Each structure stands twice: as C-alpha cells, then as structure tokens.
Length: 384
Image 1 (cartoon, rainbow, N blue to C red):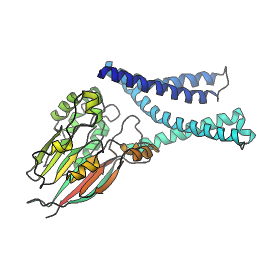
Image 2 (image 1 turned 90 degrees about the vertical axis):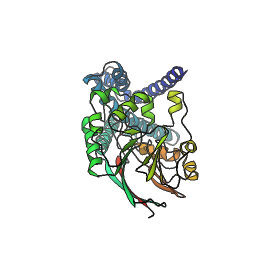
Image 3 (image 1 turned 90 degrees about the horizontal axis):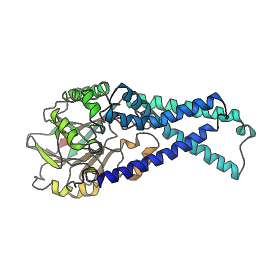
Image 4 (image 1 turned 180 degrees about the vertical axis):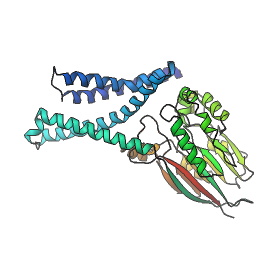
C-alpha cells in the first residue's frame, strides 16, 4: 500500500513538474526563430537542465559518483532558477492579458528584438538571484535568544543551549559546509547541543561516502548532544539514519524523554510524517509526558511546528522546531506564514516559549533569498 501511495505521489509530482517545465519552455521558445542555431541550443540546454535533478537523485541510488554529484549541483540550482523563471513567465503573461483587455504596450514591445532583450534580462536577473542566494546560504548567522522559564532548578540558574535544525547533510551540504557548521557550534561553548531534525537529507549514501559523521563526532557539550528525527530522515529511511547518527555521538530521542543532570527534561517527538513513511503512529504529546515530573522545566523538540495550543495547554516550557526554512526562497515565506502559526522566530503563548528556526542548511536549491540560515544560541534562565 505504501509503495502504491509513493508511486501515485511521485507520478503526480513528475506530471505537474513536466507541465510547468513545458509552460516555461514554450515561453522561451518564442524568443528564437524557427530554423536558427540558437533555437537548437535553447532546446538542448533547457531539456538537460529540466531533467538534471531527477536523473541525479536516481543516479545517487544506483551509482553514487562524481558524475551524480555534478548533476545534483546543476539540478539543485536549476530548481531555484525554475521557480523564478515560472514567476517571471506568469508576471509577463498577466501583463500581456491586461494589455489584451486595455492596450498599453508600445509597438516596440511586440518586436522579436524586444523579446530577445526581455529573455536576456530575465535570465540575467535569475543568475544574479542564484549567486547572491548561494553566497547567503554559506553564511549562517548566530541568533541569540534570552529566555526565562518560571521554574526553580536547584543548583542551576541558567544553561546555554546551541540549537540547530535542518542541516540536510548530503551531496550539497558536504564536508566543507558540515565542518563550518560544526566549528561554529563548538565556538559557542554551549552546555547542551540540540538538533531539531532533518540532520540528513534523505539518502544516507552521500553522508557515508563523504564521512560526514566524523564532523558530527566533534560536537561535544557537557550536558550532551541530543537530536530528533525530521521528515527527511523518514523519506530516506529513519532506522538507518538514526543508527548512523547515534553511532556518531548524537543521542536520538524517538517519542521519548531524557532527564538532563536531574535538572530539566528534554522531550523528543518523532516527526509528524512518521505514519506516512513507516505506517506507524507517533505518540501524542500527552503520552510523552506520562511519568514526567512537571515541576521541572520541560523542553520539547518537535521538528514541524504544529499543535502550539496543545503544547501550551500541557505546560511545555520551551518548544523548539524547524522544518519551515521560512520558505527558503522569497516569496515562499508568505506561504509558510500562512501555513504555520510561527514560520520563523520567537513567540510566547501563555507560559510556553516557542522558537522556530529557519534552519542552517537547506533542501534542494543551495540558495536562500529573503532569510538567513542560522545557528540559535539560547541563554535559558531559571527563576531562582
């Protein structure tokens, strides 16, 4: 049944992607007259780019190599370009429709020369967006947060927590970027390191081949390194991913909790997509709190930032999530703002503190536009 559901989902995605590609392709084709060499080049380049990401992900499963790496990089940048080419095509068609209803375009806009100029302008603008977005993705900021929980903790008045979500280790987030992320976390000298899911980017093979676990082994903190699963762990196979992460020094909480130094609890939820990929349900938050001493501070790790009202009603003191990437590429942040009560940043609901990270890595395009990747340093104070 799950294989059938996956096949239906995959077929639907490919069909929609193909139709949108054809829409963009048909608009670009109008620029180049029939029978010209440039029209042939355009056709070849477009179909190569459109197929690159799909072919790369398939090759990663059967023949992981330098060639599959190159295709993955090309295809990943193409996904960002594809998105902005679609936006440009839609804007141009809306203006053309408006001009059809109430003509306002000057005659020069109807010439072949203007079409070529417009094509070059759109391509140039998209290339600039990709370059600036790529540079931005390489420069995670340190986001500092001061939070006070209104509970007393004997012998402890504060704890320094480094929280990181959505690293997406794999081909794109390879050894260099992984080392950079790890070194920046270590430089903060945190008491505790928390990983909010999507540590790996679906397929574990590139992580193993690039030995990214060696970098993870460098993550050390007096109170430990604790993580949870995200949807991408489940897409690629949660059991293998969890086994790998635990073998490299990360304590993975799977619908379970841990009492840190007899002072406060970390409660870790399985990802919301667990039922879809494994056929097994995750526990409700209330079940996770059974047997826990609620007079102690409760920190909940939940990859996807849903059910904030439930978390507040159950007395969670601090809930940490990721998943949204805050849209990753503008204007998708408007969509995530509509879906999630908190798409990115801090909010307090009653006595519950909520923080949703934009993530330190990224899925698909190695591009961030309109937001910054981040490592969150939380100075958590207790009411002593």
